[in-house]
Length: 338
Image (cartoon, rainbow, N blue to C red):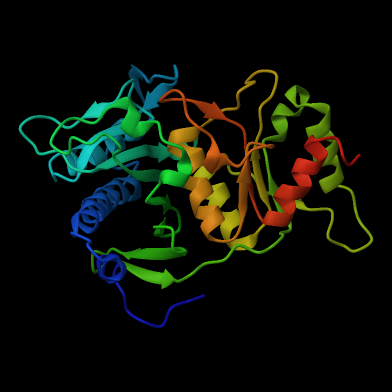
């Protein structure tokens, strides 16, 4: 629902903090630093084409993908905004091979930050919607003064204390949850603040749109092919055919699904048998947001947030969106409908 109060994101986080006895304000300061990074990235995205930040670099990331200039820039901005605040013990980025340690002499804190600095890189140069995805955990190692370890990072998604994404589209919006519902903040560049624009967002129980890259259909399982064909077949109740909407940026496709309902699918296939999206940087935070809005997120069988990661850049299939639509997809994948 739309809000009728003027509430900045810092005020909203502070008010949430007051609900939690014993809160030290450390998490609030972490989010302050992160929203600063998002504002800086948003500024450069808005100026892309004028600031020599479009196109490719000569570098490749850990996944063997040629890095875009804006990818590298966003990754660096988040690191430099977050490395010295004393809130984090370690970071992880989709663009970095290994853990990102907090440099000396900065203090170490009790939180872990994982992030995809710029989701939807293939859309950068064509001025389509892109975004930043982030995930926050509490460290599990007991030494709050020391460096974070892989044990602090490789936690299942249900351990997340916060998750969100920034969407750089017609406006810059920050979609955010701490496990108490989903709120949307819209950035006003004339004031330099994120304002609460939609509170307690709920995803529809079912929707009219499905989102998948049908160019890969020759690589799909027979069960998935039958499901997509089912979605395109007219039904007597007029709930089908569903409309296809696919942008190719997980942030953009998930944001539409959150607001309008339906299902977003990035499946495993013969080319990518473990899926394509990264569990830690994309699937877990997006799953937390959708679940907090009343939706469902699975790998086709298991709940995303219950998966135990075994490696930093682990990939996973993703079926996410309105509860009814995701449950229906799972039935097809089990072979129960044809």
